[in-house]
Each structure stands twice: as structure tokens, then as C-alpha cells.
Image 1 (cartoon, helix red, strand yellow):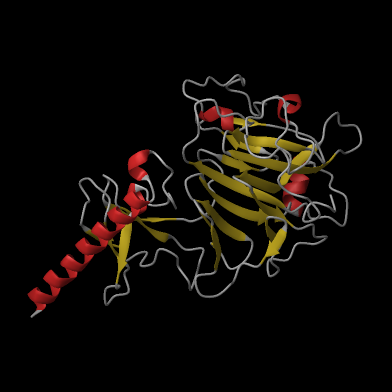
Image 2 (cartoon, rainbow, N blue to C red; image 1 turned 90 degrees about the vertical axis):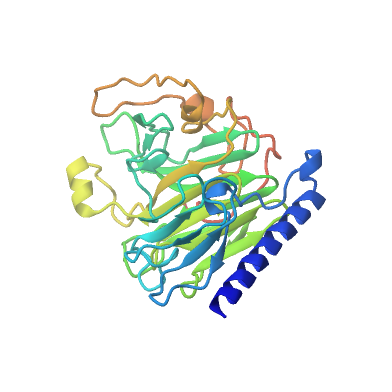
Length: 351
């Protein structure tokens, strides 16, 4: 009886695969049209199965290759893809690509990893080279500008008496693609409180609420993309996924008293200077991608920053400055969407 049930289940999954192929063909894959919802990359192309009695989640791989039709189970150390009881713990990553493995990974920004954007502000490029980009207090700069993607950053900061430049941090990010704008921003707070959510999310100019229970996520399905914002901690930490384009791990944090003292920021009273720590992972960037961070993902890119110095600085404020957080207009910008696809009245207005 058990063998018969198993055979029936496999046959059912094969039927699902055949149905998917038929749907894909009807959507124009065979004649070069765009495929809808391109979030079934090999690594995540699977069907979830019922968990093991231990609670370990399982997936049946549908991706072509060495992992085709194999079942992966999460390790006992991280039983769930999205831990619900303690979101800051490692989550299970099921990889149905040629790696064909299930591993435990933290779901948070790695400031020292590729695509890191943290501190005041410090970048780690797609080439692995670390550099600082000062920008300017109140300025907006193109972090990434490509044919189908524009990411701008809004800088906050302060300039103590006697200094020749601002101390700056990234307070908000605007992700523009197709005809949409997604904004992730740190709220301005006078005094930091770990028990208060200081993260704001906007979709096409409207504030959205990210649930704190269940899957703790907000999502929207567009014609060709799925957009997901999910909490990776109880407060102030999210993972953003725009299918076919990028993934961002984002955390809101303040400048603490000790950090202020060590770096001699001389921050004024009444502002915790809450800002974002972010790590980007991109998909389908073109070879001519631009932006402070984007250009470091070009093939054969050679960084101009000085090596071996404590704070290698990348210039380019004049080339990447945009008129607003929502503008795709700059000297080097390449985004082909509408030049202004959002109206800003939200999270950065107070700055």
C-alpha cells in the first residue's frame, strides 16, 4: 500500500511538471516573449512537501540537472525556511541547482560581503573591493542604474564645526523597476528604542504594513514579477525580493553613544540618526550597469580606489547625484523606465 501511494504521488508531481510546461509554452516561451513570474530559478524551482515528523521542511526539486526530481530536507539545525518563533535564527536554504543541497544561512545583511552598504557609508563592490562614498547630507545618489532597474539612496548626515565634509549615512532606498517604486526607509527618531519598529515601507507612494505574525510578509504579484517584503527579525529587519531583479537584506540601526564617541561624529541632540544596513544580491544586470555600486558588477571592472589605506574613497558625487530620491536622471544613469515614476511625500520628508 505504501509503495502504491508513493508511486501515485510521483505520478502526480510529474503531471504538475507537464502542466507547468504547457502553461509556460502558452505564455510565449517558445517565441521569445517574456515568461511570467521569473522567480523559478534553478535554486528555488521546487514544490514544497509536507514536513518530516521532526518538523524539518522538505522540497521536491523540479529544476533540470543533477537535482531533478530529488527531495531535499532542511537540516535539523534549521528546520524552517522562514523561522517563525525566532526570526533572527538561521533559516533553511533549499538549493535545487547543481549544488543540490540544503544549508543553514542567516537571513540578514552581511556588511563585509559582496554588495554590502553599511556604516558611513561603506560599500563592498561586486568585485569584492571595499570603498567609502561620502555623498552629501540631504543628497540623493544612484546606487544602481541599469536598463530595467534604478536604486537610489537618500543620505542624511551632519557636519561638525571645523570639518570640510559631512558625516553621512543612507536613510532610505528607492527601488524603481517597470512602472513601480518600492521604498524602504528608516524613520527619524529622537531616541532609539529596540522595542519600536522604525522601518517604513512604501509601494507606489502608499505605505504598506508588514505583518509580525504568521509568515510575517507582504507581497504583491505583478504581471511579470513578484515582490515580497518579509521580516527577518521581530522588528527593524526585512528581506526584500523583486523576482528576476534583486534581493536585499536590510536592517535599521541607530548611531549609539559609544559609536558617536569613538568616531567623534559630534551628533546633535534629539536625533538617533537611524539608518540602513543593506546587502544587495542582483540578477540579470547588464554588462554596462552603472551607479556607485552597480558599476563594480561590470565584467573586467577595475576599481580606481587606493588599496591598503584605512578608508579608500570612491568619488563620483557629480556623476551619480539625482534631483530626488525618485528621479532616474543623473550624468551616468541608464534606467529606461519613466524618468519620474513616484511622488515623494513620505519617509524622507523630515530630512
